[in-house]
Length: 180
Image 1 (cartoon, rainbow, N blue to C red):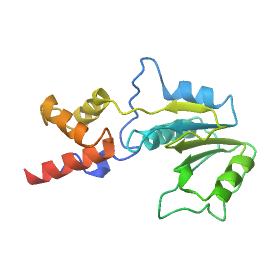
Image 2 (tube, rainbow, N blue to C red; image 1 turned 180 degrees about the horizontal axis):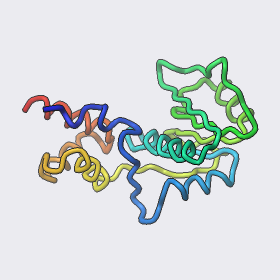
Image 3 (cartoon, rainbow, N blue to C red; image 1 turned 90 degrees about the horizontal axis):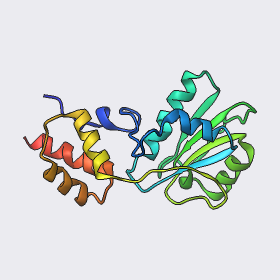
Image 4 (cartoon, helix red, strand yellow; image 1 turned 60 degrees about the vertical axis):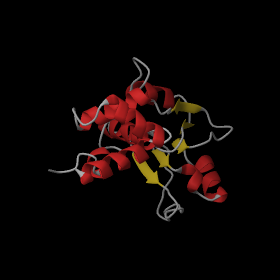
C-alpha cells in the first residue's frame, strides 16, 4: 500500500491550508493583501507558511490575475535574471530571508505588489498572517490523509518530538508507516 505520508500527498500545496481561526479564509487574506503593496506571512519552520502562500497563489490564478511565484532555499538563493516587475503583477516570494540583502531590497523596492514568507518579521512590512503550529491542526491534517492511523496520544508524542514542526512530524509518520 502507498505511504499516505509521502510528500506527494502532504507537501506544500497538496493539502489546503487549515486556518485556526473560525471564518478566516484565503479570500479574506487576499482582500487584505490587496490593500497594501507589500505584506508578509510570518511563522516558524514547518508551520504552514508555504502552504498558505500556495493557497493564495491558486486563488489569485483562479481570479485571472497576473501572478508569479518564486521559491528560495539554501540551494536557490538568486532572483532569476528574467524576472520582470510589471505594474499589475503580484509577486509571491517563499523563503524571502534566504536571499542576500541586495536581492531582498531589489524585490521590496521594484515590486508593485509583493507577499513574502519569513520566519522573523521584516520590520517595516505589514504582517498579513502569522502561522502558528497547533496540535489540533496537525491532527486535522493527519486525518485528511489517513482517518485511523494512530491514537491521539501517539500523534501528540510525534508532534511534541518535532517541536511543532509539521514537516518534521510528517517525516516521522512516513518513517513509521514504512516500518509497518
